[in-house]
Image 1 (cartoon, rainbow, N blue to C red):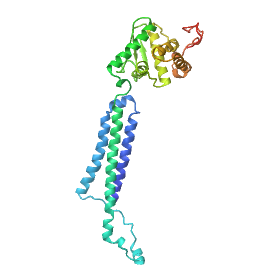
Image 2: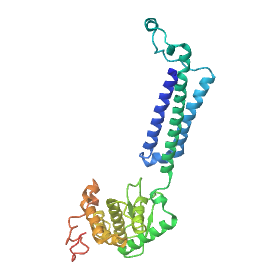
Image 3: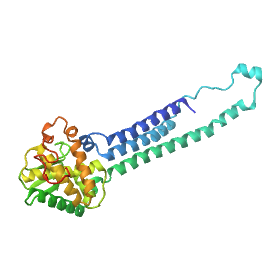
Image 4: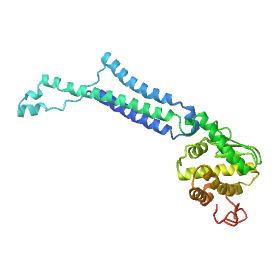
Length: 301
């Protein structure tokens, strides 16, 4: 096998590995980068790499650029003089032996090329399929928003509408918030991720993950209290954790599970708030405290 062909094969093998790594890394890039780079462009890059590999090699052969053969690693003339000339090292045998290796080499490259393109295609196909809230049909979305609006209206004390902001205009990546509500108003927005979690719970009766579900319930409760007229973020959190228990029960959870979820949210409130001190619950947010919505009951939140 020629040195140039082996070098070319190694170069394209590394390029395939780098391209697959790029495809995987693509799905961990910021949302803005993913929007700017369509997934089909990555597939075309993989396909173009293989076309270049085979077309370039074919053109080289047609032009007579078959590269420099490898150095002869057979016995040297001194060895032949001392040990004799074996039929194994005859010129005819030497020209016949490399042929099977050449064929195996080319078939290996064909398999690698097909596997590389197929792997990139499978990854991109799976990733480009609708996931989360995008995979929910319009009827399921409408039903979910109606259920969320009903729960929020019970807390707000007047009819309100909760929408799932699929466009990201109000909440999401840019605003860095899971929800938004107009204080004392009749409109609130939740991120698609929060909506999907609540859809799985209220409509499909599934609990995607304990903490994830707890967070979604707390966000709905928090925004509902803003609609009720509570402006203070920390107090809205305190009330939202308590109302999250009732919301969870309405969505199919047992009271014990719903309460455990909200207790987790209360316990992690300080760390979740980070530098945003306004989201930390007030000091009287405890059983029997001034922020206890049900001071006559022992359970809190």
